[in-house]
Image 1 (cartoon, rainbow, N blue to C red):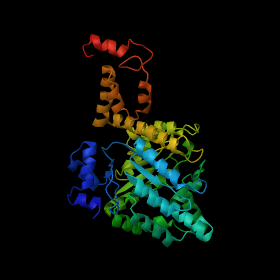
Image 2 (image 1 turned 90 degrees about the horizontal axis):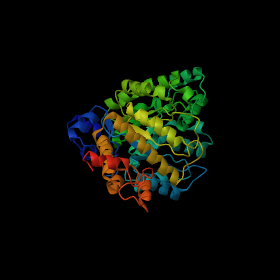
Image 3 (image 1 turned 135 degrees about the horizontal axis):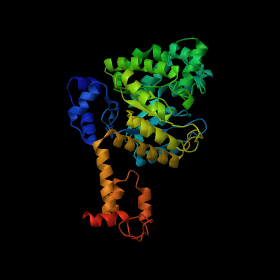
Image 4 (image 1 turned 135 degrees about the vertical axis):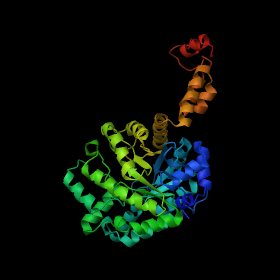
Length: 427
């Protein structure tokens, strides 16, 4: 029985209890929202217990990291180091996007090493195997795609991105919109090429009922992939994106009715003036399913700094209702990230998530803000280090500091905050 069906039967599971403790709620609060699809807890029944995270209404905004091999960099040892770097930096989940020579081995390594939820994008392996077998992605066989989805689910993937919300209606809409970037999703490009070449419906849309059966059998959380997310701010909220969101909504409701946990992947490049409307549309059309945001990139003109542009957009998106932020690293649009890129990506996205939590009124986030402020007034460096989202620079700054209980060099020994505190009787 899936998490959803147990919740609907009134049962509070180990996963729900763990999320309730982590988030500061009663278990019943979690159960109710899992039951009606407003919270998901990615956890494949075939996988050993790990650090569970609840994603959705009332939860802290969560952070996802990406790893994976490619034909250009097929180094599993490097990916293991990147996984460790992301996990040490505090990510809540990983997605393995491998397309290298040993996709199965890479997935098993990720599942073995990760202490958080693990996801994948199913069409990547199907496309790569079609290239190896038949010489082209457009030669993918629908039955083989479904077999790969079943294999990945049986091996323990906690959530899986499936590009099932792209159909012929959406494709025709996209062809008439005059997009700047057309398709930037790799999985979306695979499916688009296949549909145009074979003049057939997207097999992931056509066989959606079978996909739900697989997800339900292993209690995998379905992430409804955004195959045509805007790849430039100029394409945000065009007809194709809205049509795709309508299809995502229909599929989300089918998944929820079937007892499958489901979340919705969202747009990548979105100007800030479109963010709130986009978030509200998703919640309205997708029956309040959690929103998994790929970015959000608030501008297209900052290559090398997209971890920052993504954090700006992600913080605002989170404040408007996004529940799950996929990180961006400084290597976005430049190449595959290395360990330090991964660490920076997680840290900056955690900052965005926390900023969103404060804006949403999350009690834990607000309490953390106040604790840091009080620690600064008290000159308590150890408490500041404990409260900081990423304390590495704070720790480094304490070495050789000659001003005792504060670090600000602007005031020297006469710290304005601490001096004022004396007069107000709070020092």
